[in-house]
Length: 226
Image (cartoon, rainbow, N blue to C red; front, side):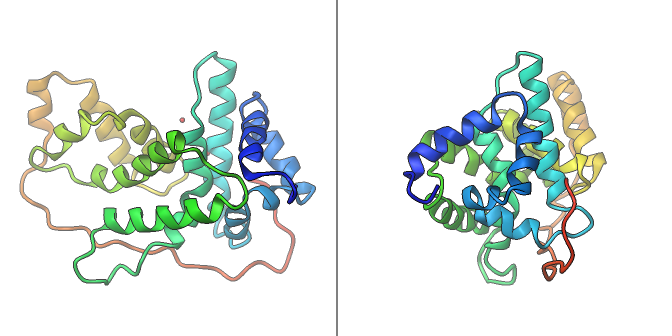
């Protein structure tokens, strides 16, 4: 695998994970110690598993991918890579107490780091890495439900993919299910009804929290993410 160009490995990864058996393939790659050769950043955080996370998110994303393929629905490498590299990206975010830096800016910095590191193993063409980074960068905006911000987010060209990623995070307990329900409901409303759903006040900025890192487990890992 080390002798195969990263661009070629990207194509092989798509064959592995977009053939309708992504979850089973993932488990077999990990069993035979091959997944870490393709996604070493992800394998590293899987070794720091905390209450099943981030394995649950990755596994749920792959299971959802299999379900979409079985239903004849399209799947995109951008969403797949967004799920696989989400936790590695979060661990590379600058410290939350840096003055003048928003959470979106921190995500953008970390995303650039992750893409550069991952490219040494399986390259990610810009037509997929840019949407992946947008999916990530839009996540903090779902927390803002005051003023006109939600209405502007609904009009964003990458809203649907980012919303699906929010639901994925909700499925594994990373975000409040009520937040997911609110965004699902507002899409079903008329423009007048949407206005009534907007929350009052500025609400202040939500402080960004960093996930506590856990020392790698000494025992073997178990298995186990729209």
